[in-house]
Length: 82
Image (cartoon, rainbow, N blue to C red):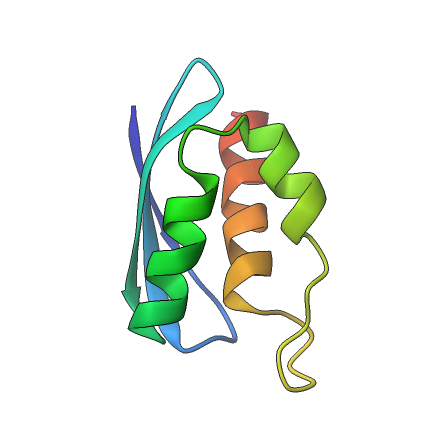
């Protein structure tokens, strides 16, 4: 199933996420640091969303209180709670 999450407090504007049976199939960030976010997407593809949440939650970028990885964790948590 595909989901669109609107980010907050970071350079990327949104995250498009495809998950099947709790496993991340594909992720695409809209905006942000393209190379870094492509790398994150490639690293988490095929992982259980719960593992990604545990690894990325709480990462802070430049004192913003969040980051693109933390926003991905928030998106995955929101999807899991539905």
